[in-house]
Length: 251
Image 1 (cartoon, rainbow, N blue to C red):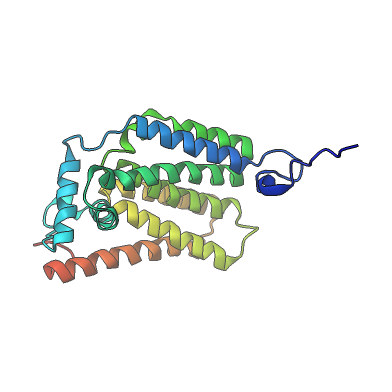
Image 2: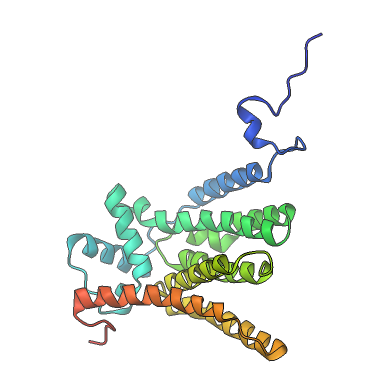
């Protein structure tokens, strides 16, 4: 009698968990593919708003004529990534929107993995699916604006902080410090998009203040958020020093 082939064998073994069910990552992959198709179907491109200024500034960066002396030009984490994709794939509409498109898709992956860690796979997949067809995210994901990247970096910053608090008794001090350092770096990245990117700072300060009032204890590891942010701030100041001979761009 011919034996029934075990579906966990062969090339598709990686898709299955030990219980024989498809892994959550497989469904996540389908969600990301669906999200990408949806975003390409509702492709925006240039919409004659601030995006026109950003792509123009990206061209200036490549041409060596960049002078960050007005607000749009000072949004470094918008204009430099666009210039980077211009350098890789050439100047064009699709290259201009690759940055928000990629951060939109990465946000889906991000929310899945943190949802899985903090709750369970079902909640993680539901959160990823909801973000996949969230109208504002779909709309802004192929528009050369900073809203989706800002959302990604700010969310990453906050979720790292929550992760450290949630698993504070399960992870080492060094790992906690490293994660908080990256939380500060991502906070800095969102700040380099818009000043609104500093909004997570209000969450951090409120949480830390409430925790201190209720426990009368202060975790010195929180300073690593500040250290991470200062790394980004110093990079920004160094860039302004090289270009404008003014680290704080006050001229």
